[in-house]
Length: 137
Length: 113
Image (cartoon, rainbow over all chains, first blue to last red; front, top):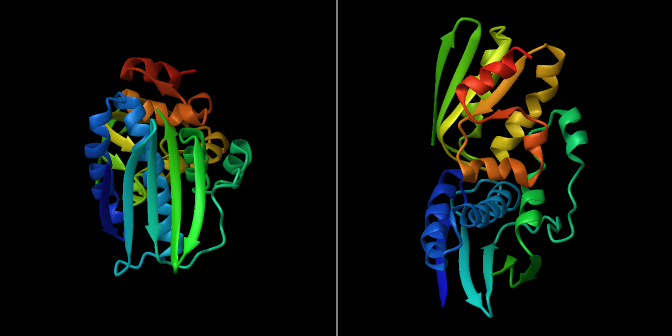
């Protein structure tokens, strides 16, 4: 079973993506905290794509797919923005203490994704960037 | 969407955060904390009872002020977070770096430490 949803590349639409994800995930009885963490991880990737790959261009879209196979939830986040070459599947993220010293506001989104999900894959084909997040249930 | 009201009780300023703090709305939280610092408040409480969601953008706002708080002798504590929101802080261990209390009275005790 695959569920799909599209949002324009604007951070104002992240809440719509979260609503879609919460609706889909509510069927899996994951518990409030776990469900919310999965929604957060997808939200973080979407925010990253909107800001860095699509440059906040609301004329572009992000496609979200959620599937479930062999007790693994698979989330796909697909965009047609500039593939920045930034590979979140290998990104480790900075040290939290160092981040605090610099006073910067960004930097922990992908760390959250890595902590929450079991596997992250990046793929580019036909001008599309595909990020796949896997969560074993 | 997030809405932030303020309450002043003696020398404590409380920011009452209601709604979702995400990449779109975290700027409002940022502005509210920045204003509180600029106004010279030394004791800042964040009432998170109505905070239904926080993403890294919101965490980043709190993290970015920790040094300012330290430098300017400002005490800050959050309280009333629901389990889902508290979990987001815990995933990265930020509950060890940021004062998080269960209740308003507990948070006020932290203001006097």
